Picture (cartoon, rainbow, N blue to C red):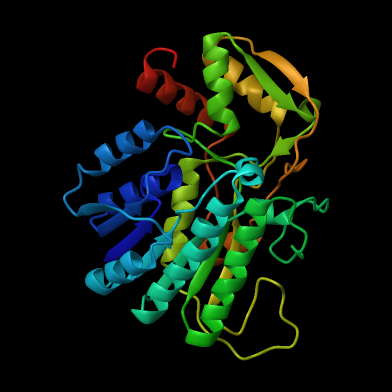
Length: 335
């Protein structure tokens, strides 16, 4: 089949594009290669994707409307996996317009392309951040998500709403995936697993927010990719209208799932796993809660499991060890 993968030079996009390529699909990857984090890491991911003869890459901004439309017109994709976005919760406090461009306007451009050129299924990245300060655990796709606490989260919730609108108006099958904290080889430098590992190996301090009293549903990248692959093959269909729909349900060809490990880990335990994998003790600096952060995340993945049979396999110590091994191998010396 022929796929478009947006954000192909990004962490999850790279792994998804590689999995599709390994299975013999034709994959077109796009990314704007911005400098939000180390561009060299993005280029190194792309170098590995270039080993696949059916993979092609284009440097395109999601909010370049004409370029996106031309790409859809020329390539005639069958399915689209939309993982490109401006990431980061804290960064959104300082650079709001990047999120408006990439996450709002860019998402509309992808929806327009999928609708206009009759793509059979759009799978797109949402985020666990849409749950905001919800204290009902675990987080369920049936829960209301009307109070985001960061601009990033608000854009991801907007993506869900606009996707539903296109599913309803144009019968475009769309599936949103609320990703919970994803980590693993080739991970993002702005995320805690990378920052903690780098600092511990260099003997520097690590910042531990809310005095370490946080938990996250850390999910290993291979498990995430397996879930994405199963979801993209499960195309939503229309159903009879109902006045009693849950927030994640619709008569339109629309679906919404949590995708996570389903087992939250205390931040201090995650740091402990890095310490064990590196053989070094972290020098911790305990700090208060940061604006836009949430105390806990925990995915109720029962809906996804019922639909696809998806169940994560990699535990935290195994996943952290594999990440640390990649980090040491890739950088070879402190950066």
